[in-house]
Length: 302
Image 1 (cartoon, rainbow, N blue to C red):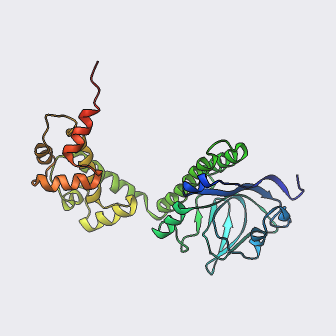
Image 2: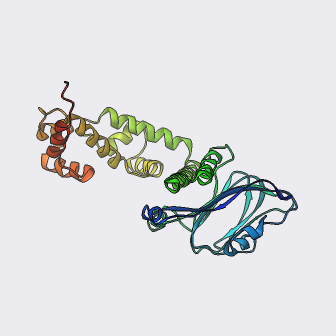
Image 3: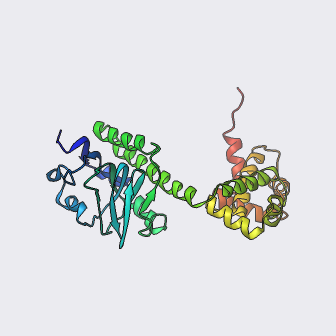
């Protein structure tokens, strides 16, 4: 092992046309520990040319996610410079000019994965990933390291569909990074208010309560409830209430003696036609077709 690293795994990964049809591929993954006073990147000649200029500045045509577990350094992207420490994540997007390196006096331990494909590019199109959000502090509690390790294990073994399994790990990392950002931005009372509203809606799923009524029960204004609930869950209280009503409707309609009109009335819908349209919009199938499907596939008891 080279003198400037104590822990190294470095791999650039092949992928097939079948892998590309899944719309996501892992292109590279690895980990290395850069010792204090060592050159960066280590083992420079083992990297393709486009990857070697990471410390000076480069542009990639793929995504990369880099997790630093200890040490210190800097990350530059989109005209901003960030001080990096253990627990920080750098997200590199295609076409984004960036540079990062450890402090010469401290070094660092980094894990990374590179990836590309339509599924990942769609996250940019939908605004889930953005050049405005490329630096995250997730903490060094250890939740991400096992996922990186599992990705590298899939790459080492390269068993059938290892690319799909590696990309599942990448999605898991992205989900943890984005959720940790949301948790950090929102005070604990956001969760308490949201949980209180959810419990009230679930308890009254058969009723016709409105959002002001829910807000009054937990002691805040309707506008404040909408704001907090959507920031925490990604949906409005009304959307959540409709969601649990449709789930309840599915359960009711499993009974072949329950009519669509009865289920609608039971759930607080005065207009069964509106209920049917809403049910189909949420499930992709009408209430009557849902009941037929469930009854056709129900156990016979024999």
